[in-house]
Image (cartoon, rainbow, N blue to C red; front, side, top):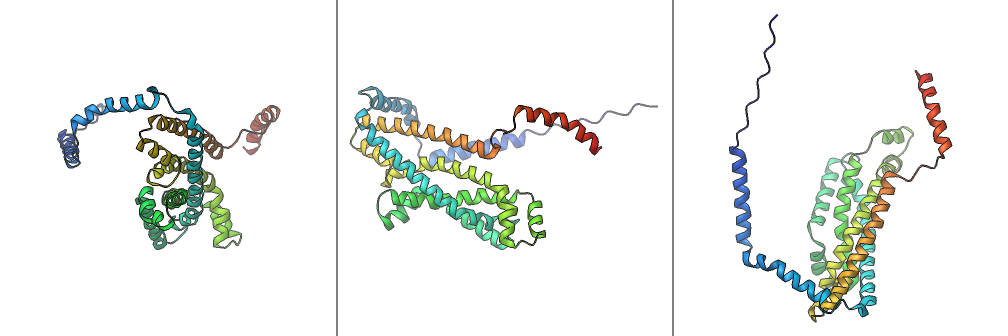
Length: 293
């Protein structure tokens, strides 16, 4: 009996396509650099300029600790803007997420809702604030809150719709089998499955909105951004350094707290069973398996 022939080795792919794609990538980067008028000499000077700004903010005279209270109050206002904007986005995005999920609504309604969410998400918060809400309600935190809330609807609606599309259809079928109407099917068959993940999205968006609220302050929407811009306009680098310290500390603390809450929501809390109960359950497991067998 003759031995079977070894399988043929596959041919080595040609490297021509790789080099073509690499060349296209380099050309696109070069074209973009020329179009935006990138000056290489300014990039070389960038580390030195950053070092000068850092020296003026933190080393020349040190941060102005007398403005700690004012900077903290401005940062609290930014957190309030982000929190209210996140709540607004969460409340408005949840029904849109159900309309945008293809497995719980019709294809036409889902497509239209998705395009609406895409359009909302495509417009930056700062543009929404400057073009829409500042002319409507004037300068201040109210305009920043509305801008963050509207922009959050697009992102949270898209993420929530994708979470709904990944659910198990068993609970929905069980709710229909018990005579539930369409609203009851969504309430008891869909929402309990996706609510932990959606709540985690809300918390993550809150972290993003804190940074966005600081940027919106630069255009007059209140908060720590307005405090920082005023300090830089008057060349008060010591006050600007104090503002940056407050931003970093508060943001890190909120990120840590939000991350812990997100993990508890998704993973659940620790088991409430005692060690004796766990040992008894482990001892009864082989007996139950043998009985089922």
